[in-house]
Image (cartoon, rainbow, N blue to C red; front, top):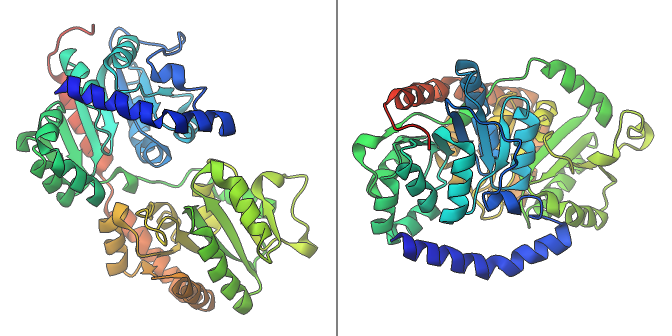
Length: 437
């Protein structure tokens, strides 16, 4: 089974190689992480004879989700080194930014046995935690051979993944058996992973880590600093379009243009999901009748001219969106007007913000349905409906506030996943096992 899988993985890598080479040439991507993905980790990586805790979080969303858990684990077991691996460059940068002082951050290995073995031999973890549904058969098998428990945390099976996994259920059943335990986000996810062959006694629901959000202690100070930096006034009406995807920005701009006809004080903060698209979106903005500015062009010494304030701010920086949601009057969830499955609703809910999203929310279906039931969000079918809701919420501050309160109540009512996972991790760490190889 593993020989066939390794052959297919290598074939897929070779087929994708031209794309990676183009990314290297055009965007200088992947050069910095290629060695680490082959298992050649930095010599400075600190390990302990007692064994550390390795958390794998593939990209930005997963890194944000595991932050509360990572900090809790650091407090509970300060003697154990904490390792965070990611796959994407943006995820790696965010992990360094948020946890660099408390964890050692590196790139997850390609799923070849030689690269996996190098990484495991260097890190020598006592336990591995894999966020969401990163299922890498060779990695899981090598962990089992070393008697390293692997815990799936915040597990979820999307509609698209379920269709694919069902076609290879025989393979999934064998692979899922390598997990020591699968902690799923919801009952639906639990039923799905069991239907794929995961042992019933090794699966359960722990909740969604993304609900474990808390405002930073210095939030008010940060909000005021950003308010001054962006030149926001008390009369400003800020719409934040977060994590927008290709083909979506033009729809948002069209809806925002309708809003501006009704509310000239309206300002749009446009935050594309992928940094490599910043230049593309800048060109798109030049084709629209908006006065815009890039966030990276704004500094404390060079703030927007109040006599010609921008109508659109392109957020072309990383790590700021989550805090900037706190300044918003209305938040649009990107990836939902185009068929990509949407993004997390909870970041704006943390700050009690009114939320709008489109028809494509398959990645967060259960959460989106809950927000709609509790009247914490509106779902729109297209750009025209989005414009209508922008205008409605602009004209009705009380409705915005009530939606925000409803969303925050959903967030607080679903906390508890961190403690559930800590209990499961503690149980696995206490089980007898062979010495670390």
